[in-house]
Image (cartoon, rainbow over the protein chains, first blue to last red):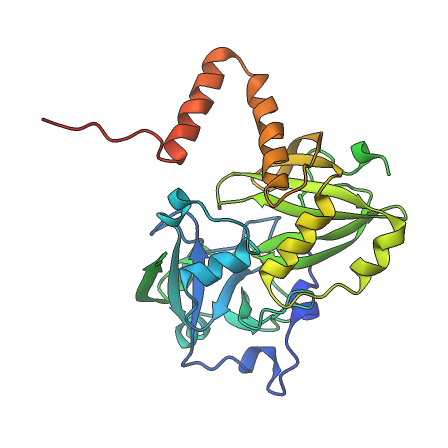
Length: 152
Length: 161
């Protein structure tokens, strides 16, 4: 089986003069999206499938987040009832031993896209999917308490 | 391109064959959701059709003809919806491969024509999944129908007196 692309973060990292890690300030928040309702956010990549978790830089609405994930395809009314976004504190993510890498992509212009990576030593070049339980718990604990659903 | 060679069981949907090379993710959210890969010299376009963070997801694949391959090499999109329109236009009117993945590994697939129109991919994917359900035993089909009805909140809550 072909696994996740180990060069994805490096190839999609931004070219900001501060670098793709430090260009995201510690006092910023990032937004995580789920289709399955509160309490269903993922706290680690899927082993053998992914190497990082995607988040949006800043406070992105559930509608805009879904529009990116679905690339504009229709969202059904029953789906809107479950879609949620939550905010995570970048400073806390770093303190927890994770890195937030700005990865806006090459094909689709989406300047808000970032990748949360573990371990933080060389996150642009090296990502490990098998986050230890304490790292998963620490990731979840970076939730700021702010969560939104779909708003018309 | 031999459509049957596009996907293999047990592979990730965005690089769905041991023979796939140049796997190029155009849009990523945790994992690739649209992009291209090659089987030998031939280019193929892929897209997720339905993926709601559940265990099962549906993906679609179509060959890219040589005379339009240059459009793919230089393709850049200002927004996600612009990418969606490009993909829908390329699938419209084509015979495509649809695959259902379990835990992001290809499990079943089949060839279906994609009608023109904004819902073409969804219509063809529904025909594919319906064929999988139709091949099951009657009680399993009933359970699938009930699960589907519950998923779309089609069954109203009982009114208590």
